[in-house]
Length: 215
Image (cartoon, rainbow, N blue to C red; front, side, top):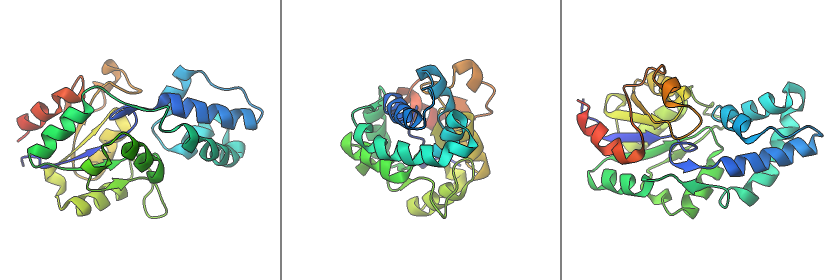
């Protein structure tokens, strides 16, 4: 079925937000009396949700307090430490003009995603913005995806998930959707070749054309 809806990931797909994440994680780790991981290490740990990030960085016993500290700091740096990736605005405008329904699913808390997207001027492009909460576990659980499909009025077979990690492919598959990946975030092109996506693109500039090739 020809796609008519797209569900985007956020970090590494639409934005480079690693400066903000590194800053807030550094604040949390310092508060816990632990060394701050380097930027490359933080980039590799991002993508599976805030709780997972702090478990990896601080250990299971200190993760809950680390999450609290991270959330206290992150709103102060979320916007200034995040930037739209090249081609994002143009791609979203082209997809809207072509009649695609758009939504966002991130393992970032949804209030943070909305804060960033509103500040960058693209929140209105999305029919819905989803993130982990009591009713929606983090990706790759498909609960967020099912809610977004309902919000967009789209079926799984006509929806494509776009992200920068293998978890985005697993998320798409769990919800019965196709997947496109791009190496603009925390995973390399070589790594993503093994992720099992339906297509890989170099940047979001190529997304409208890639969707046109799907049948």
